[in-house]
Every structure is written in structure tokens, then in C-alpha cells.
Image 1 (cartoon, rainbow, N blue to C red):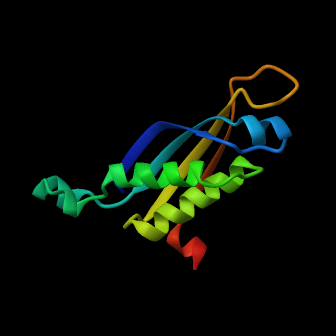
Image 2 (tube, helix red, strand yellow):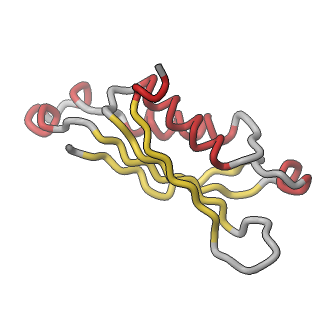
Length: 122
């Protein structure tokens, strides 16, 4: 299966359990692997034959910035469902990272990874 990857999209959002995360917000990073056939677009060189990754980016941006979630798992689920319902993707993998997550310790980020297909939402 062919894949289009959008790597390290960065958005500012208000996701988290603590009051400071919900009021001050923070940076969130998203990777998206879109599994779909690319042979037709590779031969035609036409945007109409593939997935417009600018449109995908805007969908992910909207999911990340227009709603507050307690969990990055919920944000990842929303992204997966929105993309699968709007675009011709067989299945996808989404990774959501929360850099410098509010934990009592030192770490680079916390990350969740979800794999979904449209059948998961019917």
C-alpha cells in the first residue's frame, strides 16, 4: 500500500487534565500516515487524482485548535475520524505528541499512536 506522510505538524492547543494545561495551553505535534493508492496520481500528475495534503493539514489544525480535550487519545481519535470521513484514505496512522507534558519528571514528550480505518466508525 502507498502512503502519504505529514510529519511533525505543530499546533497550539488547550488539551490536558491540569488547570494550567487547559488555561495556558501548549504545543502539540501530529504525524499522519495516510494509506491510499497513489498509482493513478503518479501517472496523471493531477491533484484531483490524489489527496490534497494542504486540505488534510487544515483538517488536523481544526481538530487540534477548535476543541479542548482532556486526553491526547481523544484528540487523536477525533483527527482519525475526521480525516477518514472526509478523504479517500484506506486507513491511517496518527501520532499525537505533547512536548514537555506535565509529569513529575523529565521527558521530551508523551505520544499516542492510533491506527484506524473507516470501518472503525460505521
